[in-house]
Length: 232
Image (cartoon, rainbow, N blue to C red; front, side, top):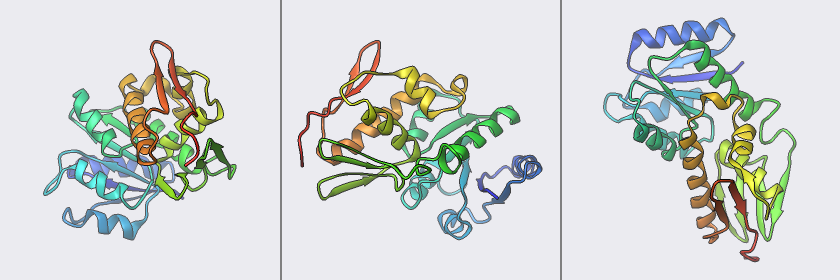
């Protein structure tokens, strides 16, 4: 049974979310102490987090960073803030998706199912226990780790999916539509800017491994992983 941790201070919404998710067999727990969100997360060990932006004490961006520091589980923001920058900040702080209030419960549930399926189900990164290697760059799809020589960096599930597709087609253009199709089940629910944010995050992970210009944007077409950075 999947466990979902709800970090939301609107008790009415929490109750509605819990009742809806319980109908489909999900286990839920809502945060009790907004000073101890990280501790409660670690104790509950959920498969997915639903997280608001406006919270007592610290905001959702802060707690997203704290959780992302210890877990790669999917994090979905649920917020009344509908500005583009709010969504960009959520993704840049480690979130996997952003749902704007008021939301359609069926769409929200579809997103939850999609991320659970990607992370743990038949489409999970580790389901085939694969690894890829390009010019000394190694992607451990199962463990969500990217390494080059002795250096390594942890990835989110979505970052691993993007690199998986790019590394399988190194030197070739991978279209934006193909990446969206690969990563998200329901493209209609994805803002085009979301992919831009994830590509930026992947570039930062590559930079940690001293690969500065390996991921190239091909204007009007998509992206290409060059593979020309050489061995570490």
